[in-house]
Length: 553
Image 1 (cartoon, one colour):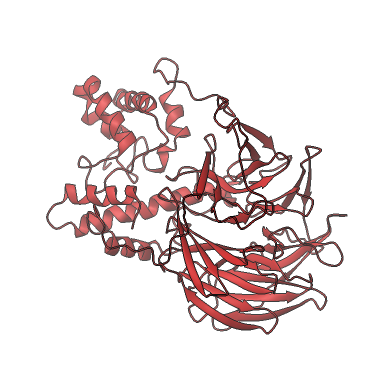
Image 2 (cartoon, one colour):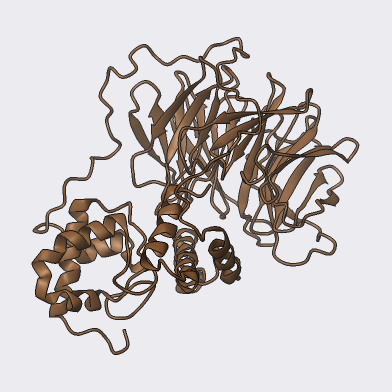
């Protein structure tokens, strides 16, 4: 079921065009596809220092074919979608009277990516992928502390890894920096990797073992998936030396590929990887420096994402594109089974092997659930989550208590959806140590990492600055037509009612709407408060004082 914002947008189109809405739907969803492209371009180019490094806003999200996205949205989001009925979980519910879900919202602005429980007493460590920081959260009070990762360039903390000593390793979003945090000493160390032939690894995952801890090979080297060079590689923490090996092509499947998830076998002799965009996975023999495979799923769009490996070296892969779980024996190099998830539209993103329960936890990006797969019974269970848009990119199992640690990871930070770290106690008593919060939970007021934004007054806040800060320019320009009408055209239209239009325009900025400027409804801006929207509305309406809109706008 689409999220509530999508349903509201679909309804707004029909409200404006109760008759034949097909053209309006096509144009409106085309605007949304373009809007998503702009958001992706902003997110993945935010660290660029030169204009030529910025991504093409016309072709980022849709992988060069936005019209296919438009066709899909026009087909499947053609109704009001006000109600749904007949949905079944598809598997037995795992929740019981002892199941507890703790949510910790990270202070905005943020782009929460991953989370881990670390330290003694335990704290949540949360990655903010849109900044150069980690956030630690006190479980009892929710108090947050921001930790700057020392780097001479934007690192963008992405994947988090726990080592055997309980310290934190951090990898970036598509660049070559690795960071290490000594929890006891409170110190950072970073490496900026480069290979002897001058390649800059685009690190994604470090080498996980079956216990989901960071694992090294026999020489103490840490292996990684290199999404930038479609490669596997290592770096040596002792001297920072690094090398990568480009993955072999997938037969009959040319085109853009990216090596993504990574796991290491129990003896540390092999790493296994998944590849995006071609339905392929494979392995790498560390001693022989040779690739194993590649192996292909029948569907090139199966989309294996984050992977994990069991204590018996069975590889589990979440098939994002086909809604399945793949089970592959790395010893015999044979596929054991490919299982349909209870909801094949749930977009599974990640798998995690649970060393005590001997099950696989599967995080979804489109189902608002976590699935559990038991290899002994071949059965699934389902744990519903309490929120819409619960985009899960990872799940960790705390080795002491067995609670699940994950996050609602809705990047980019202008995309609607919750941004929280979660601790989930399934309530099954599977681990000998019980998870419990300190007794003073709720007794202390929650200090924010930064002061809450004060109410914005027109006398002290510049509308032009808000226009930039809230990224209104994604849809609007001052004098020319973009996704939405020019600001000057809005101002000229309402010049005679300028004072009266401040409040209606402010509410439209916050809540969205349509009907005044053609077939495309306006997308609500959840990051603008009503007070800020009033300042923006006054500034927009003042544009009629500058000059008339450009011809044809």
